[in-house]
Amino acid sequence: MKLSKNNRLIQRNKKISQIVLYSSLALLVIGLIWSFKGTDITQYIYAYIILIPAYILVQISIYMANKWGRSPRPDEIIEQSLKGLNDQYSLYNYCTGVQHLLVGPAGVWIIKPYHQYGTISFNDVKHRFEQKGGANFIAKQFGQESLSNIENESKNALRDLLNYLKKNNINIDLEPKIVNIFFSEKADVIARNAPEITIHANKLKDMIRNQAKLNPLRDEKINQIRQQLPEPN
Image (cartoon, rainbow, N blue to C red; front, side):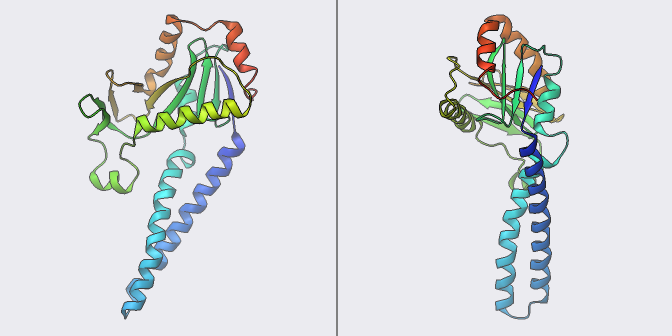
């Protein structure tokens, strides 16, 4: 498999995530010290003024750490999950309109990774993805462990990709597909009834190979698409 990756973006965001983390911790310490030393209502108000942005920065730092600071990062997990695919496939990480794009005999795929764990399913009645088990209530509310709106994020990802293609005059003449993957070892994905393919990361490569068997993309078409996208590095 050929790989194109925006390493400059990865390193930049990794540094930013560290700066945000240290800044949030510093503000928390300052806010707590101020509140403990407070002797009147004014000092307590100032303490809360400090603690509120500190809390917001903590949430941002958790999100950025999950995505950029920890190893293996989502892009590394996807690369490992697809390891073994031949050079007919090209994986683009952070260098197209979406974070992860795969092009090959199986078609054009937007890959959306999720770190949440527990039992992931799709509720036909409520028409939404659900998460049972996993982190406790506090972690879900304050630790970025709750499940986001997957379908809405898919719509945004598809829109971003189409905008990127249009902006760069790239014509793929092919409808992109979407796959959601959960990469935590503690994730149990049971979502065959979901409107989008939703699986565990360890099943990603097999799914792609099976899709390629259904209606394989011709080499000429694959090359025509790849020639318009960033070169592998």
